Structure formats: structure tokens, C-alpha cells
Length: 259
Image (cartoon, rainbow, N blue to C red; front, top):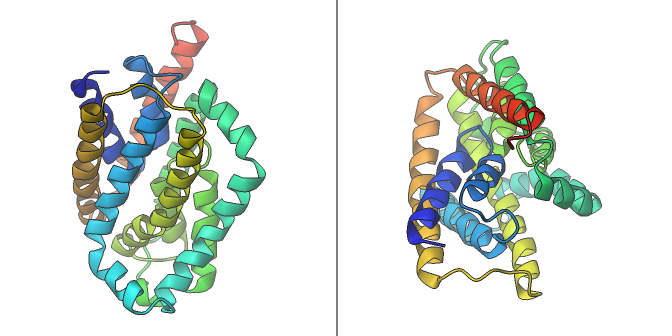
């Protein structure tokens, strides 16, 4: 694997992890393009570590506060919001691993993501801020995050949608969406590392892995900052149109036997 291919996958992972268009779905397509359909686990892990670093850097003040006061309300909100994804992930791990490998459902999942993104814009915008988020809100948003275990259901998209439905203002919905993603990303990395250490890995140079991780972190940070600013005044509908077009293209290619 060349460093250029690793760079491409790092850019894909960094941008699509935080744009509401599904990083897993896009990474599956990207790996398919560079011939890593069956052997990219360690690379995936490094790419996710990159996006985790991006979130930690962007939210450094929040995480420092939580380290100084680990029993804060924000800590409990993240714990409550993570519970649904943990339960679903543990109960149905084998099922989701299988559909992630085949990619047979990703076209339909992109279409479903678009429906939720478009639907979220049908109601009036809320005005609730971070200090107004309740444990019920966190559980509701976390339940939507659990749907993102499907490969091409966007985690950021689903949690932003859930936040909007709980009448958070647009900026806060995106802000909390990315913050609550950190335990899920950490959990995914831990599960991937367990497989890596069991021998399910591939032969990719350290330079390529480093390029992938750094590019993922860099573009992930840009995506977080841009998305929070974008949602202050703009709609999610443009992302709905994009994933609908991509999902439709994938289904057409699958139907014709090209993909």
C-alpha cells in the first residue's frame, strides 16, 4: 500500500467521520478502490485513532474539565448516551461484522441516512443549549447513535438529527453529537485492537499507517470545526441529497453487477 493511498483513506475517514454522510460506508468504498477489501483492520484502527485525536484536540477544554472533575454532569451525560450503542454492539457484534464485510446493504443505508437528515429539517429549530441537555436527551441521542452500527448509517448524522428532535439549537446538536462520539470511537478502537493482537492484521508499512493517521486527524479536526459553524445557518438537506445520490448509484452498480 502506498502512502498516497493511505493519505486518500485518511482524508476520507477524517472528513466523513464528522460530516453526516457515514465514515464507515465511505471507508468501505475507499478501501474497495485501493484493493483493501479483506485486509485493512490495522489501517482502520489507525484512521480511527486519528479522528479520536482530532476530537480530543477540538474538545480539549471539556476533557480537561472532566479529568479534573470526573463526576461532572457532562461525564454522566456521555456515559448515559453511550449505553445504547454498547448494548446493541455487544448483542449483535457478529451480525454487524458480517454485513460490514460484505457491504451488501450500504446502498440502502445511505438512502436511510438521507431520509433522517431530510426529516430533521421538517420541524422548527430548537433553542436549547448545552446546559439544558438532560439525561433523557443523552439517552435519546445515544439510542440514535446505536443505529450507526450499520455500516453506512451516519453516526454524526443520526446524533445531530436526534439532538434537533430534542429541540437543541443547531450548533449545540452538532457540538454534543461530536462530543458523544468519543466513547463510541474509543470502544471501536478497543475492539479493533483486540482483533489486531489476535493476528487478524495486514502488512502495511509504518510510513503509510502514519500518513493515514495524521491525515485523518488533520481533516477530522477541520470537519468538526467546519460542521459546527456550518449548522448555525445552513440545512442538513444538502447532505441528504448527497447520500441519496450515492446510495442510488451504489444500488444501480450492484444491480448491474459492476459493484
